[in-house]
Image (cartoon, rainbow, N blue to C red):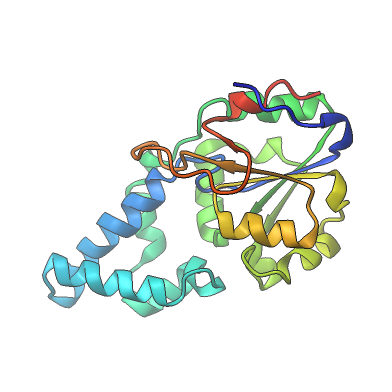
Length: 221
């Protein structure tokens, strides 16, 4: 089903990366399977104990810059996180109809900005694998701003970095906390993603309009 958006009033489209444009299967497998396995080996723990420790550590900083920082986790876990990510880079995948949507945005002369909390190392790896870089007018990494998208202060700082008019902007993201923060700043058009991880069933849509895939946002006017 096509979602009816007021495209004539939308000038800027802000797009999340992990779980929105890209399948979250890569990240979930990395943090829930590969990292605990290697953490168990590195520290002589059972896999269950390693899973519990990694989960406790990640939950303690969830929604902060550290949570997304690969350098932080390399120090905290005593693992080469960047190298580990390359071990499973074959799982990096673009969600269905993303390229069609990006091409339609370009044809409609919208400004398209990738806005991600991902660390620069992760961003670089994923752009290498997907070759999506050329589809964006700009790419903004939260680490460059010193804030994450969950924080209300992120949005005015983003606007200084990448000027946009909130009432003429669409944000697509799979994280409800981020959508709420953007809504609080006044971004008028907000869309959630129901199936960030292709290996899992769709999640609850929350209070925002939601899509299963980007075909539901076509055509772009």
